[in-house]
Image (cartoon, rainbow, N blue to C red; front, side, top):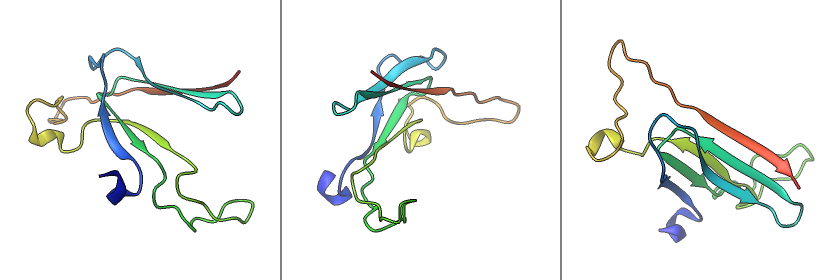
Length: 110
């Protein structure tokens, strides 16, 4: 339903997830300036959002307004509705338990 969402807003299941090891979930590269963003995480999912609803707001520092699809977001996370599906990695935290998750973003320019 990309048309209904006006872009992407999807959670992708990550291969290699074991809940403990930090692994590379995504790599995005801009061919125009050589900038590359790598995302490493211990999370089972990665949400990709493509700035679908920014048109006209918010005001940017230079006084211009934001435009749709001129930015994106990579959010390491659990799967939406995961408590409702036994096949999904567990997200229930019981009293006395500790929840830990780690995400590292590395930005470089070549």
